[in-house]
Amino acid sequence: MRTPDRGASVTHPPVFGAPARSHLFNEDNRDHYVHAVTRGVAAVGEQLATTRQPFTGITPAELGLEVEVVDLDSPLGDGEAALAEVERLYLRHAVYFHDVKYAAHLNCPVVIPALVGEAVLSAVNSSMDTWDQSAGATLMERHLIEWTAGRLGLGPAADGVFTSGGSQSNLQALLIARNRAFARAQAHQTPATDAPIRLPEVLSRLRIFTSAASHFSIRTSASTLGLGFDAVVAIATDDAQRLDPAALAAAIADCLAAGLVPMAVVATAGTTDFGSIDPLSQIAGICALHDVWLHVDAAYGGGLITSRRHAGLLEGIERADSVTLDYHKTFFQPVSSSAVIVRDGAMLGHVTHHADYLNPRSASLLVPNQVDKSIQTTRRFDALKLWFTLRTMGADAIGEMLDEVIDLAGRVYAVLRAAPDFEVVVEPVLSTLVFRYWPPSGDDLSQSQLDDLNVGIRRDIFASGEAVIAGTTVAGRHYLKFTLLNPHTTLADLEHILALIRLHGGRLLAPTRAVAHV
Ligand SMILES: *Cc1c(COP(=O)(O)O)cnc(C)c1O
Image 1 (cartoon, rainbow, N blue to C red):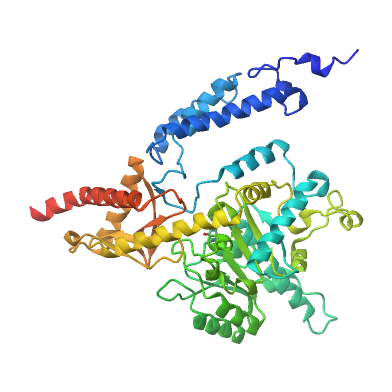
Image 2 (cartoon, rainbow, N blue to C red; image 1 turned 120 degrees about the vertical axis):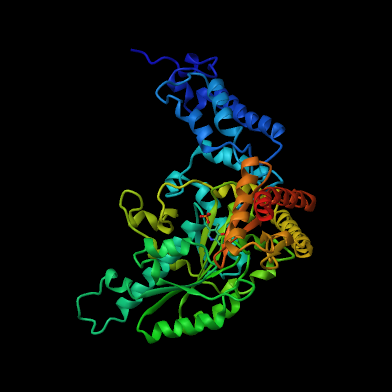
């Protein structure tokens, strides 16, 4: 039987509702590919044109009903119909981070060059584990790691790898620190003739030191790595929510005195809630004294490497043994895009596992295989988004946007400080503000009533969809939080959100007042 001419069978590729093979990304379906992806992009564009607030306020119950009735065994057979369904179930009710009244979590509006990168990388679908699945992608990722390490000032031996996010970067950094601590325990084993010490025997003695304001992924990493949550020693912070170096030094001394092993210190450059930056140089000095691994979690603050005005805030980061950066936070990149960088590239060997089908030892000497540096195997070419961004806009443009939101945070701080009905926790260094609504008329409220008031305000604003703000706790009390990453947001936008807070707060207080006056 003759094979039909591949080109001839699809001279006019039907755009939608075609046989399965017409949906494959290949040369025959080129027109279909370009058209279909363009339609998807256009649908998002149409949504942008009509979206006027960050959220519609729909509830999980309402949306759940619509999603559940979709019979996944009965395809619509038509791309336009499928797109309309996605519009109804997803686009219409998504939470939009580009909206100026989205001020909740560390989600940035994304830059368009990165979206071009996203479209390109997902179509080609390279996988970063080996050279023979990625080619130039591996070299470009490596070049971006060198660029990042260079800006951090980590020195010529630095190396690293892209990851899916800050949590994974932190996990990998702590895995390296753990395996290094274990390797040292083995090396110092006396007498050397004993049966080799095993990892589980060492785990229970390892300790990690980090401030009380650090990210929860440090604790979950400790647990995942077999150390247990309680292997993380919480170090006190000062009034500005920065790790107190004297308390750190004392805790390490206690650890050593108890015969335990200080495995790592995790400093934070930009705490998630307060944006506070731990005193990195002082902490690096303490780590050097005791030869303890210093990891700097710069998932949030890492973007400062692009800022001409604020890069100095990261002083001391060049002394870190490892650093986490989230490009999907302060570099305006789409999720996911993050990296873990180590000062001494050889340390990445602590995660290397040789699988003969992926990286036979002989071959890995000749070609660069990123799987040797990663705890993932199949991995996206997320680096292309940052590449496109730097090559189109340049790092200064990123830094300027970050500078704008830092300035904005300073201005909102002044407004909050001056307002009699708001209490703000710390002056921002980056772009978050933690505060609570506490009007003079609420002077008689107990702390737990104040908690309820602020939790209620956040809930009601989210339900209205007019704005999205975050909440957090400080010393057990509930606060509201702005996380500002949108250079398009103005002070007036944020004052509008403050007006919403007063409005909803007033409504929530009204019944209490009514009762009080009975
Ligand atoms: C966001 C954040 C993380 C976690 O990063 P993901 O990308 O969400 O996994 C870790 N540390 C800090 C300080 C963060 O702000």
